[in-house]
Image 1 (tube, one colour):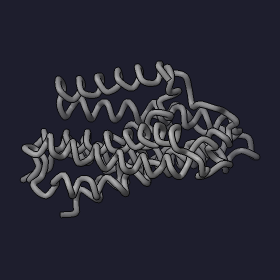
Image 2 (cartoon, helix red, strand yellow):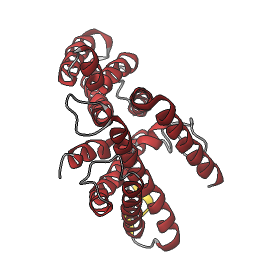
Image 3 (cartoon, helix red, strand yellow):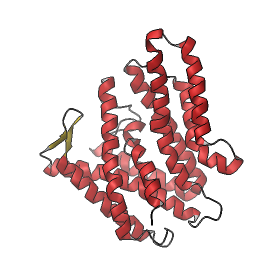
Length: 277
């Protein structure tokens, strides 16, 4: 637990540092880096399960897909749909000669699923961060929206862990993640709502006017719920690969995928909720 707490604190300092000193560009690069490293571990999990995805080129397309809103704003190409379609073409050609006949469907499916589930989902952070013409939200406001979304999803993890340890009795999904409880889930959602309201209050000068603490708390609830689901999806993948962690890059936490798992479904939902008044 001590290693987990230390790693969490250091990671938050790192995220704050990148956003403070390098602003939007730094945040976009950080999202792309997390996307590529998460995709790498995702492919390793499916490789361990025997699906033989295309690792290196998949990571390249993953970076391109995640960065595409920013690149499109800067240079006019590519659109995310174009990058994904190109990936489908390339990998459909490659499986004809580079995989055993018995693994061709699995290789194509695993590679493309990784691009959608990891790269395309995390792309929504880049969409949130990318300034638009005649933007009503400042660059700092967009940075804070991104930070708000990360804080809500990750503090749901923290709240669920601590509440589950203290009060957990009823198992949520014993065949998927035996330690998760319904009590922990409720605690995680409540903590996420409190953190969402707090960040909105602290950032009231730069966030959109409609993002009041009360609105932020209510928007945090569904994001926390899908963060829990997102965490369970990673647990399913790890069980499929018969592995406890996706990697060992972060002491006390595991791999990068173990860090980013709750963000994958939270990112697009947060993007859609931000568009609501």
